[in-house]
Length: 237
Image 1 (cartoon, rainbow, N blue to C red):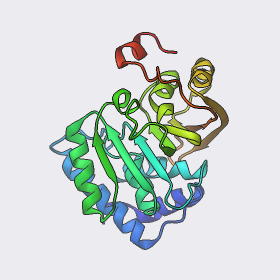
Image 2 (tube, rainbow, N blue to C red):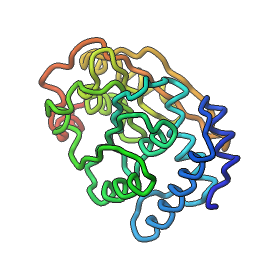
Image 3 (cartoon, rainbow, N blue to C red):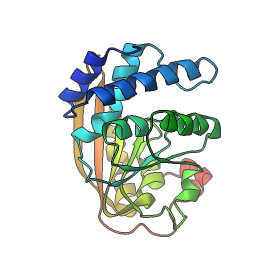
């Protein structure tokens, strides 16, 4: 056993998610794969099992403390990196129709192999968010889009909101100081067809503060968004 399963179970329960023994076994296998692969590939700076449990696994499934997806909901994890929050979400809710996108092909190959090794089913695509966001296959097709530790909220909203269908939800998973980002992003979110409906702050068992920013998609995003990445970073909305 790699991880402290009781630590994970307790953290998950505090966040409103009950994990079965089978799910805990899958999380244990995920930690093993992450630690082993990380020896030869830079997947994460978080390497200790207890830290992985709290800062990757519990932090990822905290999404369910803010929103409970319907059975079979279409979810996009944008900028998934080493598979967070996507893989933990899928372990806890294998019924979800999950897509994970990232621009780093090497990490995505690890993600795809890991999903298969865990006996799960997900779509894993190597693409840039600003290109995929213009593609009719992905655009405004998702019930929930989530992104964790990717960019400032005004920038992140331009990448993420084009994927959310009207009536769907974008959840930005942030660390402690989110109020300033929210203030700077309000205009951009409105422009992109979104509206902030809730800000949920919580603490992980290691004392780390996290914030979930819940944004409802209330109208279609203009076809001019997302812009090319150079424009998004140079002139954020």
